[in-house]
Structures are given as C-alpha cells and as structure tokens.
Image 1: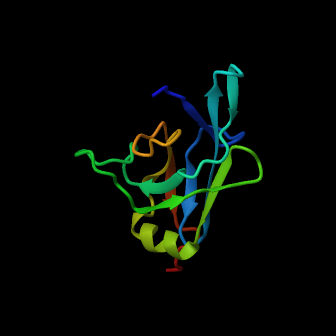
Image 2: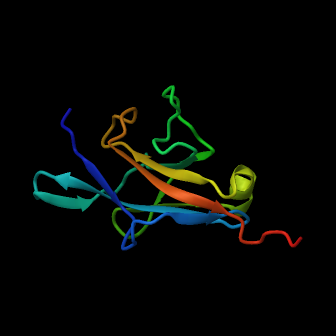
Length: 140
C-alpha cells in the first residue's frame, strides 16, 4: 500500500483555543487535501465517505489504555459543494446533554479520515482544543 498523506485545515483562523458553548448547536468543519504524485501538489480530497468527527476528553482521542475516548459521536461528516470541505451540524440538545457537566474544561474535537479502502487505518487525525462554556449562566 502506498501512503498518501492527508492534510487538514480550518481556513484562515489563528491557532487559538475556540469555545464551544452548551445550549447552542455546533458545526464541525474541516478542509482536507491529499498529496497527488501526478500533480506534485496538494489537491482537495473529494468523494470521501469516511470522514468523521467526535469529541473526546483526551487530546489524542484515546484513553491511556489505547481505547477510543468519545463524549459525543462519531458522526459521519458531509461533503460541501466546495471541493475538499466537510461538515457536520451537531444539535444543541446533543451538545448540552454531553457537555453540561464539563463547563470550564477543555475537550477536543477529533476529526478522522482514511485514504482509500483501508478504513481501519486513519491517515488523518486532527485534534482541536475547545473550551466548554455556558453563555447563559443562571442568575443567582
């Protein structure tokens, strides 16, 4: 099997920790490219059916024992009309149920994808830190 590395991007954004508010929906999105030997350049990765997103308490997405750690997901990401871009909207009810007890803590958005038919081997795994917040704190 020839390795075809994948590369992910979020667009033009500073590399800072974003916040994920409970009681709000969340749209996970990512742009994926792969290196084409024929073109000798990075090209959009289109037609992928195995791109998925999940949230984890661990930066790697796995526990110390090596098991997948998932708070929410995994959800299959959908391809946009813009080549190489994928997204998945997560409803506010799902976000609130899963993350309400984690306000003030950092979780990680894990996006994974495999190249070709070898779905058991992820060529791409990204980990983005997200600070869980409660924008509508109760009045005391």
